Length: 228
Image 1 (cartoon, rainbow, N blue to C red):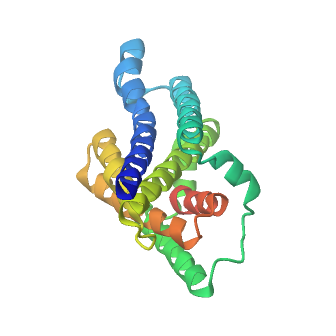
Image 2: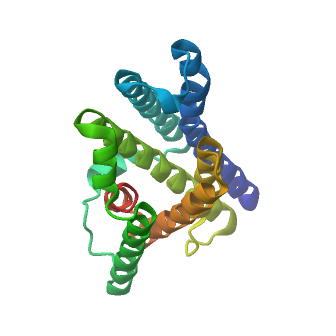
């Protein structure tokens, strides 16, 4: 009976992770179905204000969707992520030296990979391509995206730990690799983009474990690795 209870709990958290992935998928519906019908053009041809509207609506939907999933999680499982974020400081003494070294290595590898992929600074490249008006909206969008990715990691990690009673493997990163990677494959139309994102998601999940599940610190590190 005990194992059955753990299996049900694990499945519940997996569903929360998949619900968050569904929230991310709103952008596909909004940007590739609804907006093209409204504007009579594809997302790649949006003008400045259409792109701003795209990001604002997407972020609003993502934020509200994430709130609903977190609220549901608190109600049905007792896991209060918002309260945990408020209580836990950014830096804790629980992180050991070797874990800190691995975190730094992971961050550096992601930054180097991004530099190579963009042939230089991603931030500067996007500022040049987007311009001073679109650039801040683009990066606010990224902040929301990282939040959702972290939620998938948290729920995925919790689910698999319930099932396998193992807290050493970055299961949350694996779930992100399968979901977020697939999302980028579909939205970008590139298998390479999907694989590249999947690898990044696995690294993100590993960082979450190495920070001792510190949500604040994980979010900051994920922002650095993904945005910069």
